[in-house]
Image (cartoon, rainbow, N blue to C red):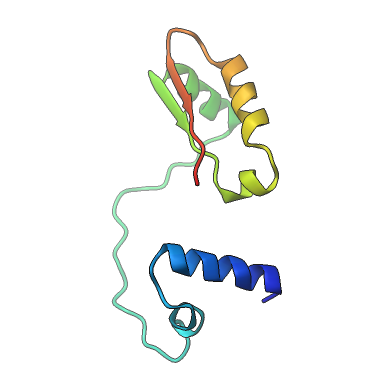
Amino acid sequence: MGSSGAILSYIMCKAMNRKFVNVILGGFGGTSGPAVEIEGEQVSIDAGGVASALNDADSVVIIPGYGMAVARRRMPSANWFASCAVPARTCVSQSTR
């Protein structure tokens, strides 16, 4: 892990009130818990299906994550979404911190 990754991991541990060493070494040598049975089904969808679902939705919330923040794409994405939004629908773009 590079120094920037270590610094980010430390900051995240502080935010989650967890010990850095436990987070880094927590996955080694331990037994895993019981497997969780997955309920429901996975449905495959293509770009046209996504466009149709968004068009039929009453409200849409887009929450860009850390990757969008690093790429400095939050505001351009929000502006793009606002330009695509239909005024009759509730369209919200939120920033995560």
